[in-house]
Image 1: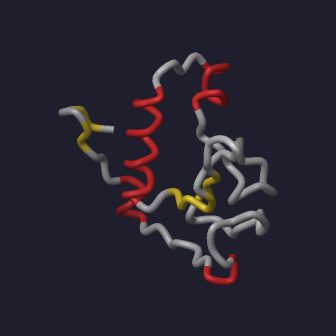
Image 2: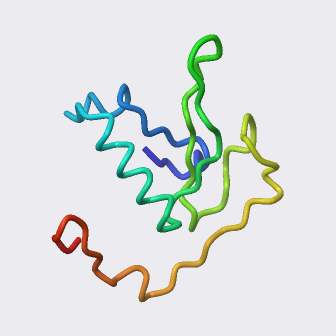
Length: 99
């Protein structure tokens, strides 16, 4: 989804993932929670249901922010995260399996 010009406007909705065979909103929610807790993604906008019908947006934390409109924070406060080699290569255990 990231194309080099849309960091901060990435979506992770069930309607987006259905075309890739995903059918569980809870799996997406769990994955997003884990990515946010690890600091790999940052939520840039909170989605809302009717009447606004907007989707949540995300940014890859180690890249500069490209999308700077319709965010839930001032883009000047965005701070790019620096990943250490240890964070990149250290396996993590989830559901008794290393990833």
